[in-house]
Image 1 (cartoon, helix red, strand yellow):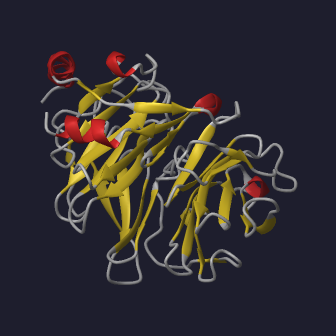
Image 2 (image 1 turned 90 degrees about the vertical axis):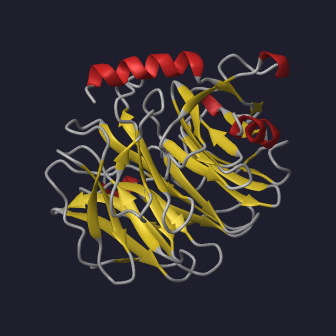
Length: 356
């Protein structure tokens, strides 16, 4: 189908296919731009952002506590946060060379310890993922000397080593994006992977059943430094979704989502994509619904990524008119964005919309 035909189909779908759901706006107590969010469960979640900002809630988002700023991190941009519980978490800053760092707290963010600094002067970290059920974790970084940087821990982030696993060779101009801490996927039961952009093609790198990465082409926007895949998530061994687009043209809907039904081996462009660039995607098992967010809106899919439809604020629920937009990252039910924006998904509203 031509690009023009795609755009016509999108306009028709935007009129007929919009649905309503609730992002309940929460008070974060900060004006920092938030890009990291991790819901631990049991009411505990952590968020992170610019100027060394780290937030924590223990009551499901009713109150967000401002954490102590890690030492020397006043001007760092914490793009990722991963937590084990209410007391233990790791935050990752993104920046060139030693501006990419990992800090860890074990006392509920009263104090922090610098546990690792990027030793590659030309490196840039994009995402951190930890498994809170064991001691493993990974950091993904942009290519250095033609290979993506991949760091591993086996002691809950206390020490880190660079991986020499095969298959990390990068294309010219290829990189990962530090938009939402979800360009890296860790599902250790069946896969570890990450998504890329900025090159002549968009790729997903997967390590399955062996000790090497293989790359697969993904049907998303490519050919510019600002376009590609920004987030990957999974429903099960076979059904996965990738979202992205061009962050410099957030309203461009062309090829902003792709999906697989065979565990990542083949990827198809969404028939009806999200209506703009999307930086994060997640799957809600309770409602069997995928949800993706970006600067100009929120979309859901109930057919595993093939078709997407827009969510809009519900005036009857007294939602803010912009409650569907200006979002960076997801860890359901929470979503975060610029200027301290935090929202919480109304699960009942999503369940009602899933049937439409």
